[in-house]
Image (cartoon, rainbow, N blue to C red; front, top):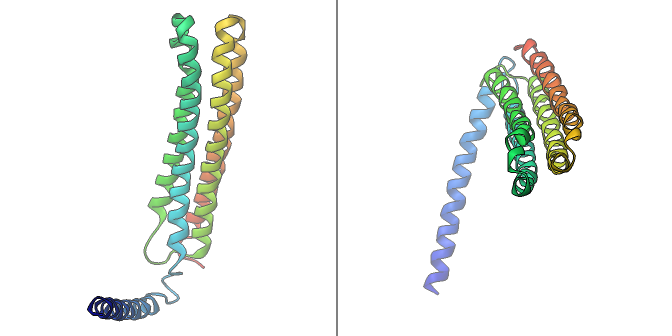
Length: 195
């Protein structure tokens, strides 16, 4: 019986603390959410754009590196002299993470605690998603082509140029996302504090 009353009293105490903390937060939000400060939730969208650019691009880079690295390791058992020539695919996959980093830095430097509007937040979210998801798709394509390409190159050396061209076209997908991400993030930054 004593344990039950302790749980009830600790639950009531927790509820009171939560009520006190949220009432203070509502007051603070009401004070800072005037016409000159923008929307209080807008920075959330901006930060989600920066995070999604970095996370999705790095997932694509990691997948492309891992998948093509498995192909290189498998091919290197029989043809070790081709290993260094086949490192092109993991290097190209690693560049995808840099694209996400660039967009994340551009977005995060434009987020301000006051005067940041929903338009800017949405523009930065779409910028991050454009770059991040393009990097994810490119990383998957680089991984699959890199894996199959290095194995095929070990059996037929004439396929090397074709493999590199396919990898370049896969990398171009991420480059398109980077370009659109830069355009969208600068469109969000160009509005400034104007709503």
